[in-house]
Amino acid sequence: MRITNTFGTPEETKQIFNAVDEKLASIYKLVNNSMTDEQKVLVIHDYLVSHAEYDLNYKNYTSYGVLMDGRGVCQSYALAYMYILNHLGIENPPWLNGSVQPWGILMDVPLAVPPILCYHKTRK
Image 1 (cartoon, rainbow, N blue to C red):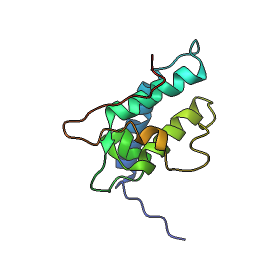
Image 2 (cartoon, one colour):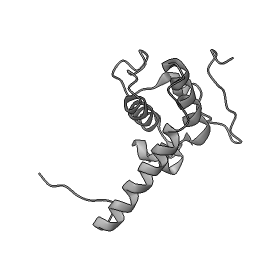
Image 3 (tube, helix red, strand yellow):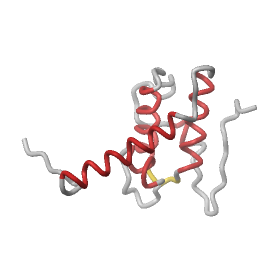
Image 4 (tube, one colour):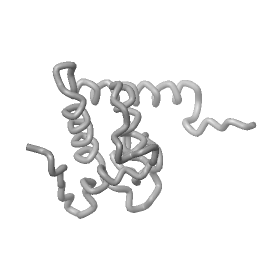
């Protein structure tokens, strides 16, 4: 097996991982223990769909794309969403059902230019 480091030198890799950790820490601060799991899920959902756009060039397939580049395909949104919810101790929503096709998020992802944001129907 061969492992290739696409981030560059060990120092560059460390800098990238630190930047990702900082981004995730800022996202985790959006929720608190007084919130229900449903409220947390909705806050994270709204954050992702309002801070990233669908990658019409189909180049960003990892959670890094949505989190750090602000752009990703379905899989990128799903992986970022699942990673954050898992960190918060929230079981993946039933609509994911082990899939990386996050239809619940994608229905809200802005595809138009300028972006038109649509939020979930349960929002009050």
